[in-house]
Length: 166
Length: 136
Image (tube, chains in turn orange, red):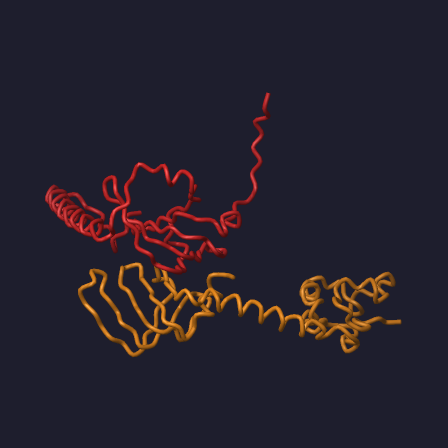
C-alpha cells in the first residue's frame, strides 16, 4: 500500500511527526491530503532539543516541513483489512456501465467528455477517446468508422455507443 | 570475450520491497527497517524499524516501529546482507551508553564549529550555517 494511503488509514490514530527542524508533534491524526499536509488533535509539541513542551488542542502541519512520521504498529494490520475491503467493493462495482449504454445523444458535432460514461471496465479507454476526436459523426463522416465493434474508444460493453449514422 | 555493452533501464525500489534496508537521512540518522512500500517521490514505509547510533567501534539500537519517511529527507538507502551483518567488526552496546557518548560528541562538535565560524567571520569570510542539524 502506498505511503500516503497508509497515512490515510491511520486517521484517528495517534502519530508522531518529526519536522525538518527537529521539532516533534505527538497527537491524533485528524486529516491528511496528497501533499502530506496534516491536522492533528490533542498535540504535544516538543522543541528540537527536547527541553521545551507545548500542549496544543489542534494544529496544522504543512507537508513539506515534515521529515518523517511514526505510526502505531496496529496500522499495518488495519491496512491489510482495508485492502481486502476495497477489493470486494471493486468487484461489486465492475458491472456499472457495462450493459446497454447508448451513446446516442452524442450524434454529430461536439463530442465532449465521452470518457466518464462508458462504465467500469471501459473507463481507461474512454478517457483516451476524449482526445482522439476521430469522432463518430460531426466532422469525420467516413464510412469506415461505422460499426460498433470497431469502436475502440467506447470501452466496456457499452451498448450501441457513439453516433452511428446509419 | 565478454560484451561491454551496458543496458540502461529505469531504476525502481520495487526490488527492495520486503527487504531489510539501511536508510540514511539528511540529519545523519541511520534507520534499519523492512521496506514495505514507496511512491513516485520515494516516500518510504519501513516496518520494524530500529534507529542505530554509531560511536567509534560500537553501536546501539533503539526500536522505533513503523516509519513513513518523506522522500526528500533520504540521502541513500541500501539492502542489508544479513550474513555480512554477523561478521561486522562493530560491537553492539546498551543504547544508554551510546546516547551518552553521542551527546558528548555533539557538544564538542558544536563548540568546534562555533570557534571555526567566529574565526572565519573575523577574517571576513562568510560561513554557511547548517540549518536544523542537517549533515547533508
